[in-house]
Image (cartoon, rainbow, N blue to C red):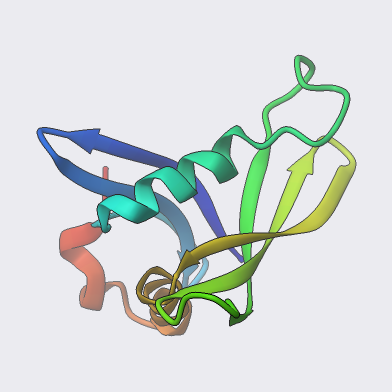
Length: 121
């Protein structure tokens, strides 16, 4: 599963940092995102549903399942697995269809040469 690590804004440039495993190698990938997704991704990363918030870090994984938003054709509802220690649960969040399609594309990559420019060292 692709893990959401961070979202950032620098000089009005918005980006997302994810971790994907390609051919057994964990790669951190940074790519540009729309401003609207910045706030949505921040909401995910700030979501702390379990009571042990100070004990261990949370981790967020894209489930790769999604469905349409009934009110906005550019938005979809996607499932994110939230983990902390032994606790985990799926939650639904809104993201743009464009962002979700990027995640689905990353999930299909079999050769890191296709994404070399996005690898953050």
